[in-house]
Image (cartoon, rainbow, N blue to C red; front, side):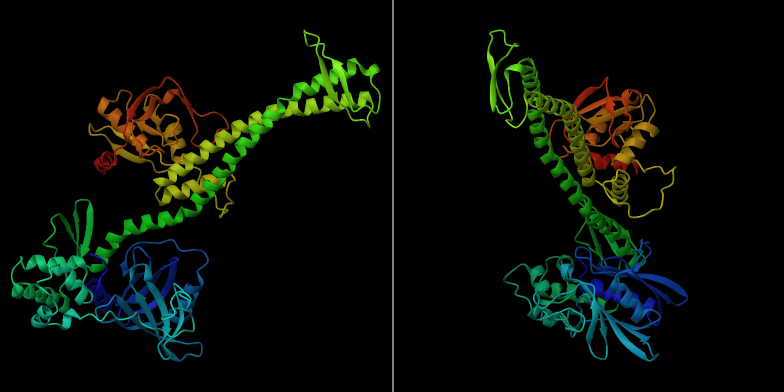
Length: 570
């Protein structure tokens, strides 16, 4: 069920019962499109989440804790100025639309009571939260600014009049009787669930299908009766908050979903339902946003190093000409009395040539023969010294490319905490400037993800370099089995056994392949050996190790298997 008009009505009713005449004590803006209001009402403080997130817009009381930015955004500061200390007079829904208005009485700078409207529009990517002056109907500010160039019919900017989203000219189902319901439908056209959604406001496709399912494909009167019963419950605020899981899909609703079969979880309040349903999803969406800047930075760094490598190889190729400059210097020195200042070139016998050939050497006519010889010896020494340096640079650049590729691979499967550990790693490596001077605790242990094979053997996975280093160098025992994709960036995997069965070995290899750059490939080579054969070179980058005495198996990553092994651990 999407956050439709019926869900909006249900949550508005719940908020009205819990928050009316409540005092707004704190306002936070933990994320750009999400607000947290702390409201003291009926002897209890409640946290209310207002979200205009493009993917997961919603409004409900929450038990979740969010980390707030040190410097509050301007919109948050404006809300604090106008609404903190204010009292919620009433909460209203516009018809059965997904628009909720908080009427808030607060005092202005001179102490007079004024009314402000906080209007929440829950409309997918068009969702918004606006603060409006009730007397003038002027927008004071909103979470998302929409200039006239983007929408000339509805400008959402400070100082503009607030205009409600255009009406869809649908019938309010709470005011429709059975006869009017039947008249709005064309039974000969079929697709009755779509017709219900198109003709009646606030009804999602999921609710429309439930109405049809309850009529048991009967005649018009049975369908009208089914519609009437559902709407009667909604009208009387009789709700059944449930979350239903079927075919790996999750649904949430405030009415029973008899047309879907699956595992049902019931909740005492609508807010607890929404809090539970959206928590993981909203977090993953934030992780994606959180890692965007890191991914862009890493790709830019990778591109720089990939472009640097051909230039270094070209420099190395030029450096190989050093021996010819040495030869020029030696031949000029050996024949110095045959040469004089002013000569532009000299053809001299090459005593290194068994056939007695000659070499034509360019000369600077402004220099003496001795100065020309010294010039070539200097060029020889310079290029000779650069050869070792260029070789070192090529080696370092290749290592840097491997390192950056491994970080990009880790971002693909990172959680919020994983992303922060990757960011810390880049700060410690001086790739990024440290945002905070606070030092992390020395005994901080990264959280290692744990799986269990179908034969009940523990498997641990490092999902970033901090976790990889801790898992391989501190957590694992010397005789535990260590796995890693062969010559492919990926996670370190450890089996807590010195003699794992074949099933466990195959499943651990599958996990290693899944958490690697070859995640979507087939027949991925995975090396395995004992931890005692895995070494971290001195001064190596985080996550880098060398190993020997390995064997190789080939597996095709299976996402369903990885999920199953994770569920076995849980």
